[in-house]
Length: 301
Image (cartoon, rainbow, N blue to C red):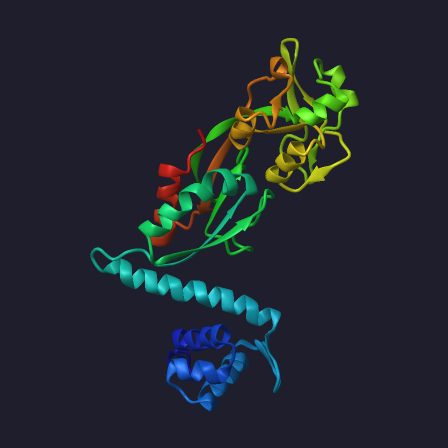
């Protein structure tokens, strides 16, 4: 079949409908087609792509890994098409799905409280939220926007700063009652320092030693994959943790956590950025409004 004769958009629409409706018959009713026509379209699509997308049986409907990947890409492409069409009309609202990757700490303490207003403001936008503290490949993970903490490496990514936060060492009163409060860097040697379970730009705690700033290894018996996990471990008395101040502000105010070694805090701050891939062209309106909203309401103070 000649390239000009293939209606790729229609193929994607029908395939996405098959996946979301859970079968050919339901998709046929939704698309106003016959089940055989839907089945033939899926077979032609697989033949053209050279990959099986759906495992078929009389009892089960299951996507292959290739089918899952094609479904995710197709839904985003269709959303972009709809978004482009609506954006061309005056006064139309952004529409489509946004895949947002962010740390659990930012999602819990900053994003969750402001998200309802964003959804009310843009009813045509849906959000796919992925929480991880690890740096991800935006292209490989099909991510529209990521909120990252720490210094940014030089890359093709475009960043918008959302502010920065001081870092602070904290512990639960129950932990301090059992093991005592550290007063010096040497005291840290006998304390459990809860750490991250993956490599970070600065692998340890920045602390003052006289007129210098030194890095103290975060050595302990417990590790966690994200800052919110560290916070919860500290709250339950598992050890000392060095965390972003905005994540423990309420815990300190209510006495659930206590700052320690503040006289040795060097005052370093961790920056937060909202980043996206710089492609040299205009951003989809759904992505642009999220970036603008985070800059307006999702700043770290």
